[in-house]
Length: 119
Image 1 (tube, rainbow, N blue to C red):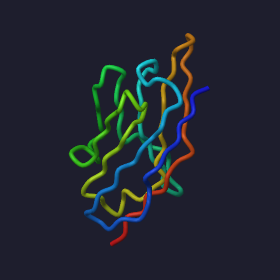
Image 2: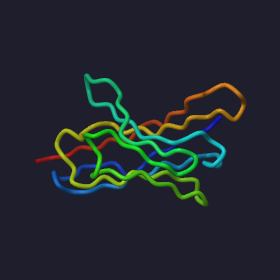
Image 3: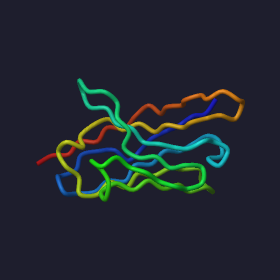
Image 4: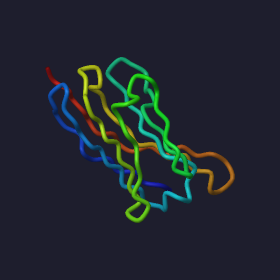
């Protein structure tokens, strides 16, 4: 079982920055990619950043240029640097791991961390 523990959420003013962290209980290189998702009240969960096991990052247009995903392979931690935050970035942010170590794909999720952007 892979455990993911997010931290770093909080209250920030619009235009500010936050860095989220996700501590992973197994070696990140053994997994098939790490992602950050978010879910606002009444909305569907949406992908905000993905990084492959090879280190290639991708983002949807609505965060591109503002959010950066990265990993520390020694500490097995995934980060999401969020800059130029907007009111609409307010959400619960979840860390996700794609795990195919034992053949079939298994999705692992963290418990989420709250991000509130104020005006």
